Image (tube, rainbow, N blue to C red; front, side):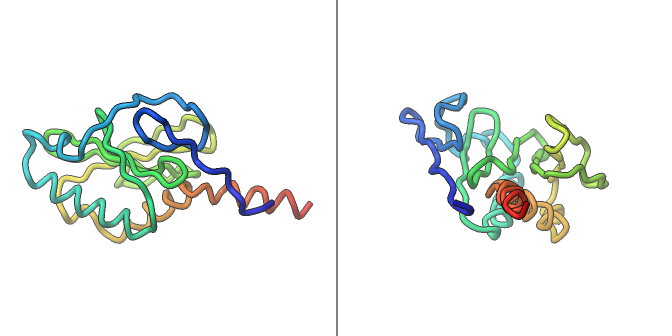
Length: 155
């Protein structure tokens, strides 16, 4: 039935949810504050602004893991690693986007591309970034799978 998605599996130990049962993960719990200990307070303000931007896309979950913070709808679509002087952000897009904002693009498959960017000041969070986040949010909702299913049904 189109549009019907399987419920997410919840790890009984850590409570994190995944699209696939028993998916490997670190199974640990951390707080957002853990990531900002010993860091310049401006980084927390930048992160909070980034988080506000992501939340504008719709409902999602924030998981603070040992080394990173991730944003997830059905699947992880964006995240952050708090460095000493900046935040390294990332978004999962279904196409490779060459853009000055991205300092690295990782392509684990030909149709999956993680675009890395830096946030060093509040002004780095702008409408241009918001557009990439909205696109990544759609990936997190697995909208690309719905479009693929509907194209198959037409044949």
